[in-house]
Length: 250
Image (cartoon, rainbow, N blue to C red; front, side, top):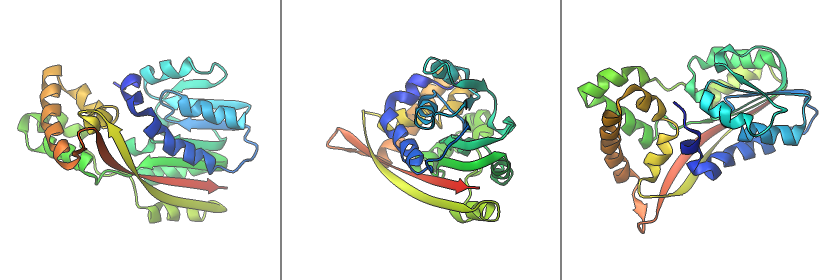
């Protein structure tokens, strides 16, 4: 289950890519906007304040996140649904750090392109190959008990290459800009990277294990993380984080 408080522990670092994505959206009149995977609604509210659409939808599958979002702005239509099941057409389709949870991106992105009237703006972590995720899969695979209980959480990398996304957009839009940024994030705390991952990649792991098993799993996983992401002067951990961005104009 998603935990808004855990996710918000590194709110500045998680907010920065979304703000940079929003800054690249063309300043045109959007009558309708949908935020796919709106989470706690913070970014959705920023979109609403900047573009003032007649219709603003925030869509997410987590009740806990939407409860937080609803308290931010009652003028936004908050909907609980899976991103794959969204319908309708919108002037701006926006998604920040959500589509990496879904598979079959060719089908998904073709649907997004067909449902967008004017602009598409997307940001996704591109970190499946990073130590944080490699070590997570390693911790699952090397223990038969975890391997059995967590096999359903192990996925092939759903994020395609930048070149493949460009090909998907190329013949269907008038303009496409795709880029990647690696943020060298200095994060604080004794177990900084573990606390970061608890807010995202460890969510399905926690849902699948008992509390005792989860505590044991995170102890083993954290020992691996601390070898790869050591603290500097016993205070800060440098956590490189790659993200892929896309802006497309129909």
